[in-house]
Length: 291
Image (cartoon, rainbow, N blue to C red; front, side, top):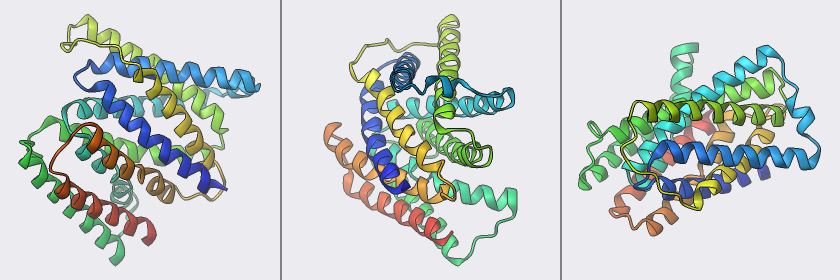
């Protein structure tokens, strides 16, 4: 059954988001991103080796390598956007916006595949948009202008890329039928290469202005994400699993992130944000149930 797997993925994802916020708070983003990704990849490689599944995970054709490299490039860009946004914004604003990713899957279907929304889908879109308006009002109360703050643009780009990646995951696991461990292993390995290259370029051109501080949660970020992704990939690999429903359940992690994040990072204006979060989650739920 895929339901226990995706529920476990959602819980792990919530702690991953909290650890990620702790890592990047007043810290250099790219070194954190690289070291956490490297830690997760080494952890997953060790797990595969111990369980005897590493040789099977290494088997991958050239065409599939290109597809997984493309996925890794999308995710590396997405993570860079979200990590920088998390450093600049309260987690109680970033996490709910990230939870709206299923909306963009619907929007992509309208423009790419002429999937005209029905009445329920239109209602769901309206609820999400209302949530954004409410978050805009809450953000302005904290001096965050949704139309001008670069963090909002970054988290919006990251959310859109996350939606595209989710659709791509279903193609890799169900259409191409690449084993879940193989997808995750090569995806993680390519991420280390891509993010490492980005870190080298950043240092060579002198773009890193914030000093790097080591924190014990950095390797924890990578390990939590590897475990969450393992549950997610194995749930999605099961035939007939709907990516829209999976994405909805996985993004329910926002409830834990919002609640604990508000306490741990002492963020304010929570009543307005809670109402905005409820509107976005209601809209996402309507969209997924309507499908």
